[in-house]
Image 1 (tube, one colour):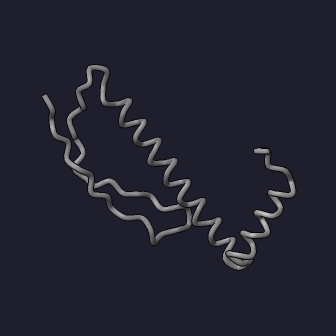
Image 2 (cartoon, rainbow, N blue to C red):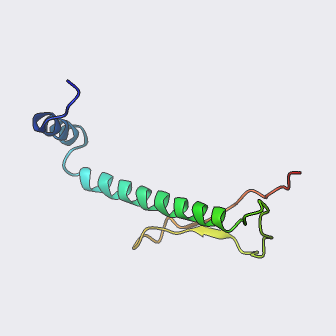
Amino acid sequence: MGQIGPWQILLVGLLVLLIFGAKRLPDTARSLGKSMRILKSETAAMKKEGDSSGKDGQTPPDTTTSQRTIQAAPGDTETSRPVDEPKRTSQG
């Protein structure tokens, strides 16, 4: 009990095929891939921002005045858009 065998995987695959249909599966997989790429790039940006904040806990001054833009997936020109970021407040 608790182990997934090849028959269970085959059954789940057939159910997904029946629910979504063969025509919608490629579009669903493509949109899932785009979402994963966006998540990965945003995670990397957050890590980079966290590393550049300095060791003393102070955040570096904001020298950029342009808006950041969420990059679209390669070949997709319709989904890139500017991002309004919250203003940082100093605590202390």
